[in-house]
Structures are given as structure tokens and as C-alpha cells.
Length: 319
Ligand code: TPS
Image 1 (cartoon, rainbow, N blue to C red):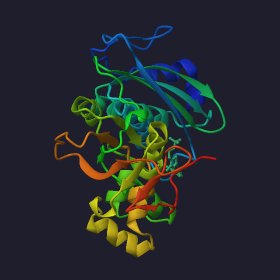
Image 2 (cartoon, helix red, strand yellow; image 1 turned 30 degrees about the vertical axis):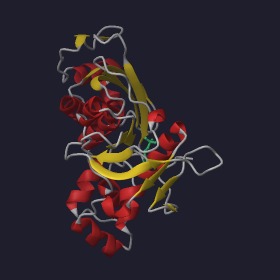
Image 3 (cartoon, rainbow, N blue to C red; image 1 turned 45 degrees about the vertical axis):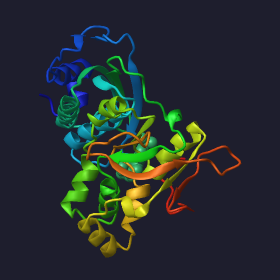
């Protein structure tokens, strides 16, 4: 293998990258032709895309290429799961400088492949282009397997709000890394390699979720989209969140209220959903609030914590 992607060339690089990919039952034709063929027995395809840029979404001195691959696959696959679908495939658009070590690109692909495997999907194709800043454009596809998609607009007054997965760990890790530390490892690892609860997407749909979202920008911010789309408000109960002792300790050490990480931190890719209050939820779902009639003139969208507006660091917004 040549040292840099520039030395290897576009087609050499594509050969190196695609040689690492398995086929799965959902894939009729993998990489190598003009396009791949992914089965959609459901007759519908769930599709989503996300762009990640070096410096803004990841740093090469904070994460390995493998972890960048795991995380960038995870955030797309989690979006598919949050619709109530099972992920089937991803496609990668990679912009890379010519001096990028080939191993960075192959390790990235290994990370994408391994995270896809966790979710039951695989990489079916992509493109590589030369450019100044490493940029990944990832498209993920999924299969609803006959389910109705669980959209943001379905929350009903009286529903409970429940979450599953991790909350606040990635944001705590980002705070630690931003301040030049590399530990505690649990938080740094959570930031480098989130573990979305993929299975909870389709399972939540089957339990009767009335709305569902992937928590990427922060719980309050993402539930704000649900509340707005559904024309309701949402009230969360701070005491119902799990703030682990280790998170409280590190919060104390860096002077941050850990509830800010839990409620406003993104990138753990937890799943939040609303359910009719009559639904018996399995233990992995934690009930943290309820859907209430909107009090705002703007016809919904307010998320309160213990009845008060939550204005402490308002989630992630690029602009
Ligand atoms: C180096 N960050 C970037 S994107 C995002 C967050 C919390 C939310 C979702 O983005 N600086 C570095 N790495 C990071 N991960 C952050 C800052 C924080 P999108 O809306 O693009 O899906």
C-alpha cells in the first residue's frame, strides 16, 4: 500500500477501501459498479445524510481514524433507527487532501464497517475526491420492515417522554478534551465512540411510540423539534435523570453542572421518544417527563425542566 492517498490515486484508494467490506443479506450488489443495489423488501427506503468536517466534528489529535469512522457511521445509523427502521447500508463521500496517509483512510473504513456491523448494515459504495479539509458525507439507508415511520409530529398531550441510551457522556468528554485532558477515559471514549441503542428504534416503534428522535444536538434542543412539530410543550423532571457519581465528580472538578451535559449535550445519540402513558415500557427506557398542552402563543415547542424554561447552554447549532 502506498504511503499517501495522493500516491495511491483515486482508483487504487477505492480498491483498498472496498476490499475491506463484507456483503450482508440486504445487499444484492455491493461496491464496484456504477451503483450498488440494496434490497427494500418493505417497498420503502429510509434515507438520511450527514456531513462531517475535520476541526468542526472531529480532530485528528483527539480521535483515531478508526473512531472517526465508528462515530460518523453511528450518527447516521442512529437517525435511521430513530425513524423506527433497521439500518441496511451506508454510502461514503470522502474529501481528502493528497497528503493524507492511506492508513488513515483504510482505518476510517474499518471503523465505518465495524459500526455498520453493530447496526446490521454495511458500506455499499462511495466516492473519493481531493480537497483541502477532510470531509465525510455519509448517507444511510434503512428498512422499516412494514412499520409506520415514527415521525416528530406525533407527540400527544398526556404522553410520557422516555429516553434510552447514554446522555451527557459525550459532552462531558468534549469538555475534558477541550481543556487539554485525556481522562477520565469513560467520557473521552464516549465522545470518540458513541454507542447508539440502534435496536431501540424499531423496538420503540413496535411499543407504540408516538414520536421519536435521535439525540444529536442535545436532549432539550432535539425534544424542542418534537414539541414544535407536534404543537405541544414538553416538561422534563430533573430528578428523573441519571447523573452518575463519576459524572458529578468530573462536573465538580471542571466547574460544570452535569445536568447541563445531560440536557444540552449532544452526540451520545441516545433515542428520545413519546409514548401513550398506558404503554408498559421495558426497563431500558427511562421516563423523564411528559407532553403537556402548549402554553405558548407560537403553538408549541417549549421544553421546560421542572416547569421552568431551560436556558442553560441551548444545544448545538452550527450557525
Ligand atoms: C472538534 N459538536 C460538533 S457537531 C455537534 C457537536 C456537539 C452536534 C451535531 O452536529 N468540536 C470538535 N468536535 C466536536 N464533536 C464538537 C466540537 C461538538 P451535526 O448537526 O452536524 O450533526
